Image 1 (tube, helix red, strand yellow):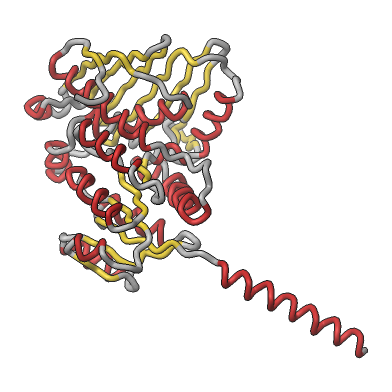
Image 2 (image 1 turned 120 degrees about the vertical axis):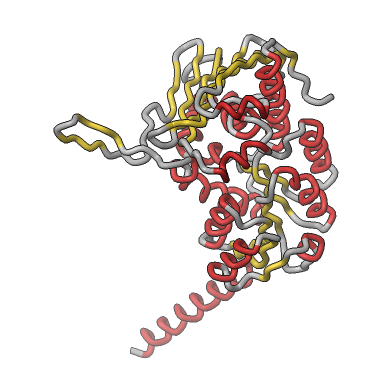
Length: 368
């Protein structure tokens, strides 16, 4: 009996020592979030639900975003002045979901303040500024800088990239990728489009980046051509934009990206990608479904679509947070972020947007 008790006590002491050691070495990523609007609120909720991550501060000048933060993240300090916010010592990383035009300022000030940075896509609407941001990040090797292209963290795209890397379809000949966003006639959406930078920079940039991700190598673009129509939103033409577009991007060594984007999908959101190689092809998200559910009745069979981009990639948005956390806290090298690709995507999108207006093939220059 005495031996049993002594053994039990020894086990408790060992367990206590392990728990104490685990607690003392546990790391926490303290995040300051900029912007709590449509995308910002999604990111903040995902950050808060991720282990070893805490949102300690939120910066926004929008009153209803401040109220949302008070109601949903009561432990976070709320700021409306970015300089005061970024100077807080309890912030380890700044998560930027502010308007695109503010990305450069917020990123540069965050790095100068000694913070890691996550920046929503695109880095900038201006290719020269995008490359300036990339080059600035190289001057801060001790800090992690990421640009958020969520498809990189979707399981289906990661699986496809691994298959391509393993040689499953041989050498890549072309990538065909499309994004069909759900129809939205609201004034808020139209106001957003005016300042979005255009469909290739705002929407197709997802397809450009995921194509770069799937190729898996640093490829140099040479030329771009784009065309499109404004039959659903005629006013887009006044803004140098279109509601349905097609783009071709030619790279060195016989690689082509074939892109399509739409702003008027009536059944919901649909993103699909096809990679064509010398030995086969890989198709990703071929069916425009949100759930693996088919409904059959007297009218036939229909699938359940994703209502929007955020719903379709809900799990990927969470995985993106985990990848950034693990990169910052544990220095994991296979994180999936690529800031050079993010800058390159802006350059390609810019050339396509310009080609859409001029209706001619243009060279792709990474920066002027």
